[in-house]
Length: 233
Ligand code: ADE
Image (tube, rainbow, N blue to C red; front, side):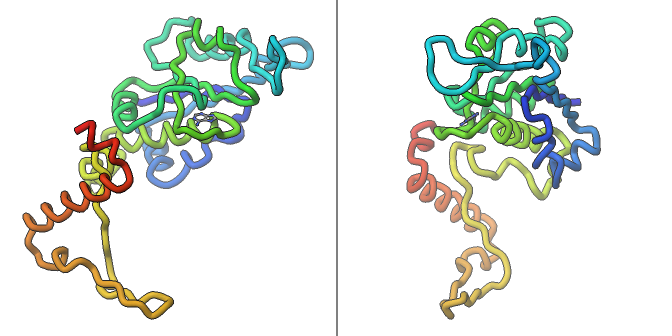
């Protein structure tokens, strides 16, 4: 079973979205499992501190390396593990669909969520965490990012999505964004009394032509919003 261990200062933020819908059902059906590790359980001194001021000055607090190491060792028993170790922070490698495919094919993930101003860099490097970002923007911590990462992986696990929700046709699977989709009503009259039709081709029943139209629209949409993806194909 694909197993996720999440090390966080805010364990109450989990399972969060991961407890709902397809991902929550997949967990109930034992397609994946979740262990949440509370960094505060490994705090030092009588105050159980997990963080301290940054050397060299500056705002905010930094999570201590010894606290992180103890938390990691509590899940790996010793520091050697074959599970990928991911530290979520804005200054990491940008996550993409291919990364999700790789992680979902591994035995699971150990995720460390950053908070405050970050985690002592020595812990990240010596334990061997890979720095991963979910995009070029800054969140107040890695907990939402962890849920994004896990949700993206779990839906790729065998037996999680039904055939109707196949992952083959979706955005990024061929470095293209997905074509637009339509459903009933066939003619939709909006609030401003404007009429909107569904593209005729989709009502034609010509499967080859529909396929070609969808490919063309995928390329157009990718050109418009993500021209960088087309350079990769
Ligand atoms: N923590 C704060 N911002 C983040 C981001 N963009 N990606 C991953 N973790 C983060």
